[in-house]
Image (cartoon, rainbow, N blue to C red; front, side, top):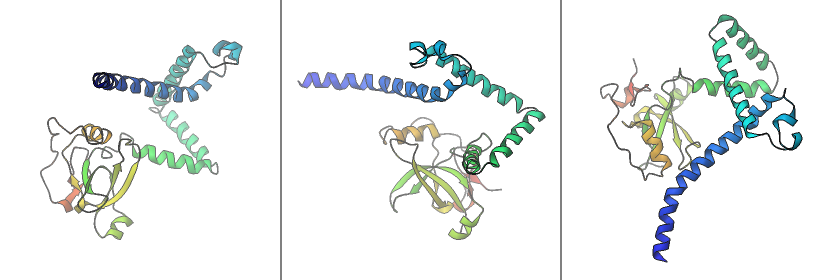
Length: 234
């Protein structure tokens, strides 16, 4: 029984990552296809669905819908390079923002999307340690922004936003408004930090340190940077 148990655990350790990876891919495919399937509305259901149109959509038509969605996204991205396309998109934005209730949701989603766009290079690129949930204990987090606003005035010094992800699911967590004097930058790649969090601390960060983007400075002079550490505010 001891040998069988050991073999079972060894087999589980091999099969589990493969099974979970396939499950995640299938779940993503099913979730995305629920939206993209509607793009084939112009085709008869008897052609795209099983049981003469009463059953689920055939998998190969789902792939066609995904490719069509990808093509539409590429097309939208292409027209944004031209003045006329930008004017049309601006008109669509104004039309959506004029609709009650919908404008609140759209505005919030657009602001979040802009915050994580390529232009916001500082977001989620700086790994830090902060004392959380009490002094003496440290949590790994990511700086998502800095403030020159009412938050600084309320705290009495310069502050930054720090996202503390939960483990093993890093998609949720806590948002801290922390004084820069209490934030300790860590020379750790973001990928290593995510692996450390997802593995519940069992995978220790290793490998070469990322390049330091600026010489060491005092904590009061730190700001968000697009590198592995915090650099001085000009």
